[in-house]
Length: 357
Image 1 (cartoon, rainbow, N blue to C red):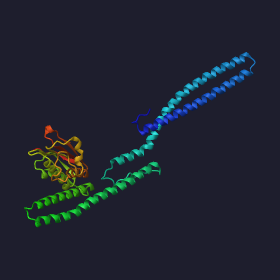
Image 2 (image 1 turned 120 degrees about the vertical axis):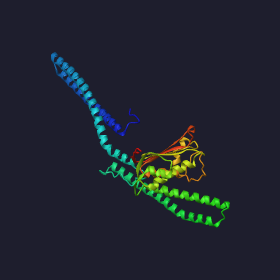
Image 3 (image 1 turned 180 degrees about the vertical axis):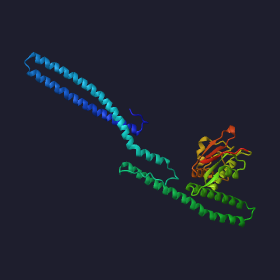
Image 4 (image 1 turned 30 degrees about the horizontal axis):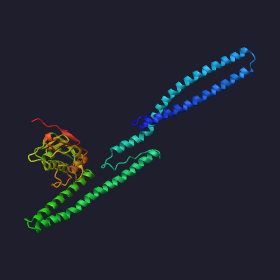
């Protein structure tokens, strides 16, 4: 029985060998039956025509010899059939590999695609067969996805730009139109500032999703120290990317660590080559809730959902990290360690070893 985890190539090879074995076995059976039937008929004819006892005995001896030869032929034919069936499995394995090679190539290319590389295509070459049709279908799907992603990014950017102007106008009117002691004015200004932070976050998120048009060499340790003076730089690293976006990445992580901390709690930033680690104390976050913290407008349980943030901080961090070819992970600290998170951003970088004093 073929296991559930076997590959298509294995199944094709085994089916190929099995079909060869069955058909070969049927062929041997038919040939053997025909030979035996013909030998029996010939022997009976010789016996019927013979008058001499010696001739009859000779015919019977010949019949015995023929049967023995037939048994030997059947045995060796069966062994030969088994050997050829094994060869058929090998040939089926090789043939299936040749046939499925374009499928493996398409799978590898499709697996390497992401929302930032949707402009790439499989571009399957070869005869106009089922495999090329599959590749063309996937390319058409990628084209529709690229259009949808670009439309979404343009909508976010355009909507954010359009909303900034009226919000700025409202803020100016509130600041000069109402007495400073008015409680309503304070509430409206806070709401206005929250909306502006939200829109700025959406703009930055859309910019990170579009990728980087220009790159420069940026020392990650310097950027981290500009945003957090007490950053520990074990080994600095040069990252090819945007200094502004990398600064925003560090700023968001530090702001998040301070906003969701406890009074007198810990905030630590460390740079080791292209690895940036930000640690803080704070409420204990369940491990199951950690992945959701990187989604827009998501906050973990136990966090202030009406606080100053817009719920985009870690989403922007992930977007900026992806734009620089890196990734970000988070780990919840237990209650014994003071709670909080350890957020690690890993970026491709050239490590600069610290010089001896």
